Length: 252
Image (cartoon, rainbow, N blue to C red; front, side):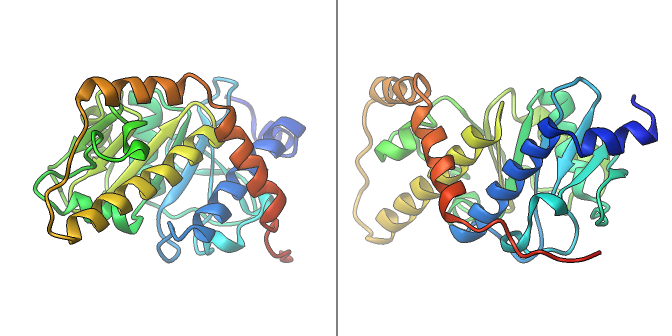
């Protein structure tokens, strides 16, 4: 593990600066798209140097106001290594376990409304054989239906991480969702379209009419087509970079 002075140096390095900017952009985009809930929930990205250090949004800020300068560097225990803000004590109970056990580089946890609504149903999750948008997640979704209360200790995070079984998306029963990826832009694209797919299913279900799924083989093919070319995901994130502000500047 790098010494304390190197944490500061790394935090202000160009590669980490780019990651901080991308994480802040993802948070502001989530707020813009209605995926945030107060000052709760967290996005995290592991530094790619094997040091088991992470970037995380700070405690007490709305996602809409987070800039790159607000992002905090922490270790696997959630202790702050660099950054000007405090860290919410329970922030890493879910994130650290998923990074460590599931081997995910980017972890996005939200209580976004339509996805959370589906976690309250008997099925607990999105039906990936319904809309074309939902099909991109076919074979990529796990369900943790064993709601256990607030994640206030490491064991609950570890239980969630093991329930993922390597999936990119986990629906947490009576709770919310976690979306993971190898990079921020791809993970955010999945988060956005997951909520869109869930919203379509909730809306269709509200009509009271029977829903018409496609054959699983078709859903599997659409998932492969989507994952086979992620340029659209990257272009979407760059469009967000052009159109969303960098957040307000604050002293301190």
